[in-house]
Length: 469
Image (cartoon, rainbow, N blue to C red; front, side, top):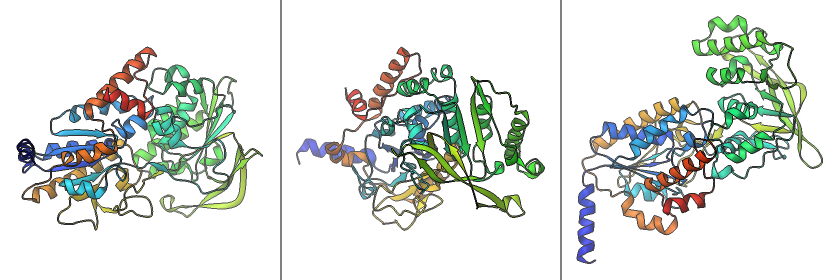
């Protein structure tokens, strides 16, 4: 080792002396919110945010519906935070491939995993792999420009579609399919999705729920948007609401307001639907038994089991399938029954329901004296529940635990990313924040040409090329 190398090494470790270094894996809302809380509560801390994609913001960028730009405003807050001197963003690094969990724990004082839930849950029924049976997650990624989903085949040539599930993602999918093009043209929806929707023949969309109106998972904001959608009629089935009105007064306020909105819409239903209107049809007490296909294994419909609720108390009622069934004819179906996380590293303790095993954010049975403590936040630790506000609350809670644990340490000797930078550079092209800013600038400029806020790059190779130019 020459004198110059010795001086550089001395400066490196002098700079980091007694400053805790935290690695956050995942640049979505959970990761950013937790990191922000850490810098707020710790006098000195250095944070490296590592992300699989070359670009930050996770579900805010790729999950939030394009016609909900106000939800994406949090990106401004995240951007301001990422520009702090003690915060670094390193994109295009995959945990379990480019770097192992053990390596991260060797070079940091704490490691927080927030990489979310990347796979969708399946129904496990016959013909689920049929043509035009799609995961809602992939469809959302398709219209939002996720590189993973850019080549998704979506056939919108049929008249009727069905969404299996009644959460907010299901309503997002319904709204995108039924919205007037003039609304979508002003958003950051991908241009190829816009072109496909312009040629769509979908006129009728069913939203299928296993249980009743009192058990829907969507929120009042999303339902109100759907009901008020221009040139679209909402058609409820009256029999699905038997006994519902009598139960309203005993409900908690959020559920009461949501149920009252459904009842109001039901009572406003008319049989006069003009030929130009699209139809939104929520139906309840139905579970998919089998996808029906033709000889070419193209979807032609869904066989639905008819369900009933058993039990006296509404909150304790169970949904039970009967022997009765009915056929819903459709040429397009979306599975929207939830997500699950992926075990990307063999050292991660994973539960059978697809989350990292933890106690309030601390990953259990992983403590080793020389390695960083391990934490988890967001959907990777809680399961895919709640909206961004719920994720923020969880991230703050876990960050508080990290602060408490770090304050108990007497000294900090870890060097963070710079200690293994050369190893990473041999495996992948690392994209830092300045690289993301080049991508961001390119996308917004392309969007202006189309009269949109941005046109997202969907090719990872092109992202890297622009970032490194």
